Amino acid sequence: MNWLTVPLKQVAPAQASNLRFEPDDMVWHLTLDQIESQTGHIVKKKSALAAEAGASTNVFDDGNVLYSKLRPNKVLCPNEPGIATTELVPLRPRSDLLDRRYLTYYLRSNHFLNFANVAVAGVKMPRIIMAKFWKHKIPLPPLSEQQHIVEFLDQADALRKKRAEADAKATRILPALFYKMFGDPTTNPKGLVKKKLGDLIKVRSGNFLPAKNMDPAGRYPVYGGNGINGYHSEFMFERPVIVLGRVGVYCGAIHYSEPNCWVTDNALYVAEQSKDLHPRYLAEALRVANLNQYAGRAGQPLISGSRIYPIEILVPPPEKQETFANRFVALYGHERHRQDAGDHIERLFSVLLHRAFTGDLTSKWRGTHMKELLAEMEQQAKTLETPVAKKRVSKTKPKRHAGHDIYNKAALTAYITDRCHADDRPLGRVKVAKLFYLVQRKAEIELTEEFTRRAAGPLDDDIHKFLSLARKQKWVVLGRAQGELKPVRPGKDVTKGIEQAAKVLGTAKNKVDELLEKTKDWGWRTLERWATVLHAAEAIVASGGEVSVVTIKRSINEHPEWQAKLNRPEFSDENLASTINGLREFGFLQDK
Image (cartoon, rainbow, N blue to C red; front, side, top):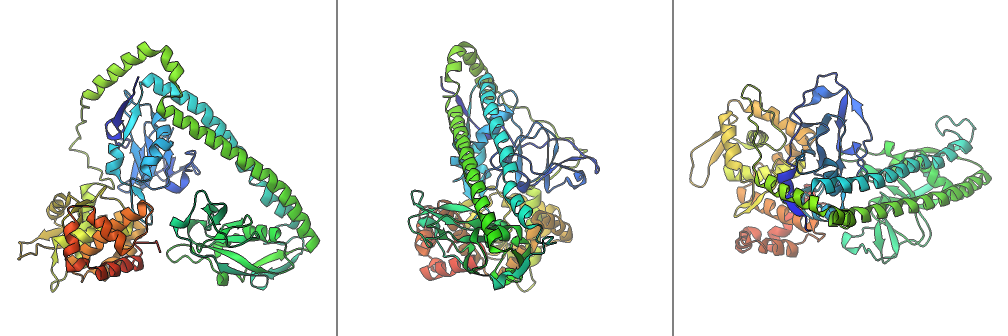
């Protein structure tokens, strides 16, 4: 018996709850960093921030499944109502067709992840392309079989969660050993000697290692600042080294490496150290020092030797450090055994998920309930053929505009127009369209789920709709065509559009202002080249390739609507190379 497969849009459309909260209501107020990827646990729970519900948030309840558009995959099945960032899409499974827990497990399974990891756009912060997401077909067993699958997986998931709770307690043992033996470094209750790190160690940056050189079958671990990033067939160091995360969210993370390893340029390593320090003790002393608090914050956290050298750490007598190191190694052995056991449980659960969505997990049960299941499948097919009645929206209530609606696109268009228009420099609609694309990429927002490859570059096909709306709102004025130029200029109420766009851009507003200031004098042909090359580069990076003139030309040539570009002077090899370098300088591309 083959299950039906149905597009997600048909059985789990994006639908927020119609709940409204009072300002002092205690509800979940979720951001992406409050959800653990693997288990869907919530790190923080309730807060009295219900008053913040608005255009930049989604309201959800216990009928939703929250799915993160950002990679890595994060999925949550809430059991209480709340408010979430718009990066979390509130799916509303149809109760007559799809079990909410079944959908949650499916979105965490490799069946879905293998699709999601390639259906992405964006370089710095890859997001799943929602147009592809909605078209993805989910296996749809009869409801009774979905519920039976969920019962199996719930039991296995409960064991995983108990293991995770035990692991969380175990991770506190090693830091506790340091404080027990040496006391709090801040108050130094044992009166130990304190010295500056600059007098004890020297750190250096690791070496660049392109992603293409990462070898899944390699023998040697690669440390990139956030733990082990993969394996490589070569190594930099024969001995273990102390690795310090240098940038980003893992800035200040400390690792005592395996022997025979590679350290990338996203990390620092201790190249020299005083003979007064045992390496194991030093690694833990650096961890306790919480180096992240000394990182520079311009753009993203960043640490360097000059920032951490003034920090003082305790320097106990050598015999005390030796005792600590011996105890640490013994405890760390138990820690590794625990980690191996945890990894084994995760692998078993992954196998269960695989079997669940191929039908193997419930094959025996299905054989004894075949008659009932066939009847359910017949009803499923009839239900799917019946259009879902659309709810009428009351005209007396104001419409809430979510992050992806035409209203916000119109506001962003007004913002671009206001920043780039000048009486001596008329702004055309084609140029607005290119800036609209680049601004979204720079701000790392996704008002447009998917830009279409048109002759003039990547285009939002709704542009006529949101330009028209911006005109009706009196945010912009659309002038009569002047030759090839179709002018756009700010309208008398443009301030309202600017205010709405500022809400949409959020903390990215300054980056966008800088981009528009640098590009407002550019011609539309230059902007077309930049938008086209960036669109092609994102596809190359998402597939694991390296951006170069050759790969960009190959990508452009793969699309019939873009092939003619390569015959134009604007797309010469020299101009393509200049554009690639420019995109890197502007922060659009991060590869090397």
